[in-house]
Image 1: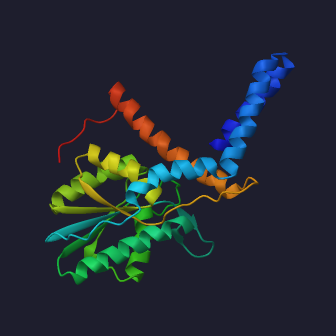
Image 2: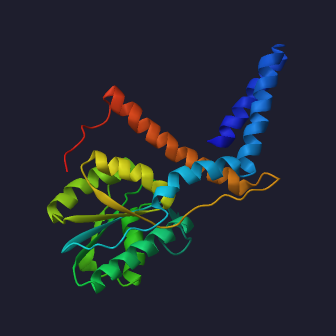
Length: 249
């Protein structure tokens, strides 16, 4: 996303200079360089991630209800040759956090289910929910407490398809587990479908301030921009009436 924008600015600068529109060409070139430096040197991702993650930095107090549901939002998978599909490297923080939360819930001697939400958006012939559940079983979560939602292909559908499953479980407390940078958009979508969930963060991202641009900072900028665009799209679609009607809790 970010590199595409920088490339578009460079292309615009070249075209403008070729047409002798010096002000436009020079402005586009300066903007491309400035954007590359701000993102690559860590200033832009640091600011963007801070606003996304700060509300979820501290994990909430574990005030368990008699019956609880932990919703784990999946985040990608990878195919291992001659083996199987498994969660991607960036997803293990979410899996671990969900497993820890589940075992803490069980130690409190209250009811607890773990809903894993994720279909097969990458067409690997194994739903995300299935590959994540395999790891969760290895971490001690029994089959009878695992619920797999394997139709959703994005965060909006995670919330949409979790709604009827949560309604059937009728648990008074829902815990929503995802990466810190992903929770703002996730909570927004779940609220739209009437799911008042308590957000619990897994991994927390931090940019590196440096004098020389780094690929890591560029990737982090892309991650943050994707979340902001998702929030913006939600509000635009709501204003245009393109979203499904909001649901009551």
